Image (spheres, rainbow, N blue to C red):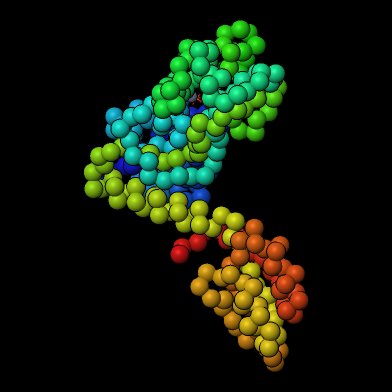
Length: 285
Ligand code: PRT
Ligand code: ZN
């Protein structure tokens, strides 16, 4: 049987979440004989631990069948790969930032300036689309210190909380694009590997669907059930079971964390009692 080869980041911001996602899909990874490869007994999966910059190339070449990588690297490397699933973690943006004390008057500010970045590909495309000409200084790390050491006037870099910019006396003035972790696949997987990928994607979607959702159980007087059904969103419609106590029922449903605090008081007003909220591990719709 064939193994689906998945490239994940060896160590960095994506590593832990990538492994966690695989674990949540009930795939346990045991260290392979070679340090850079992990194998699983639960699913025909082989892990290749790589630097994130190299993942698009390895997937395009078919050395790995699929990969988990930041969308920014996919855009930058511009290789022949397919984006098959967004994962919602490692979210960030790629932005233009200038010194805090500079007066910003729109995109024309950048014309003729020197800019430091690790993402020249994405930047060049943006500059061309906006008809701006700049000198690009390509550097591989600590881009944010470039203006203070006189290497550039401004930067184009990844921003998440924005605190790195602030501590380097820079301000974000334009968001060029957004990024999150994604799964990419090689453009030509054979039927067997495609089936393995589809199976894995199904598991991932099942895990993602459960995120933030809770199972809710409550007891309510029968005469208030219609009011309670109007408040509870539920997947299709809530389950109702009679209680031993005459005139009362137990209601089961699914609510999202975000909605939970908004509906709890309303449920109590409708006479709901003994409310239990339980985590959901997997959800298949
Ligand atoms: O060794 P390897 O090449 O594999 O790793 P790496 O050092 O190139 O990448 P790594 O692990 O730092 O990041 C991997 C991916 O995480 C990136 O490609 C992005 O897709 C994503 N990501 C999400 C981030 C950030 N958030 C982030 N904040 N990558 C980098 N940063 C850096 C940014 O470069 C800047 O220096 O964090 C700083 C800004 O953070 P804030 O919170 O201060 O704004
Ligand atoms: Zn990297």
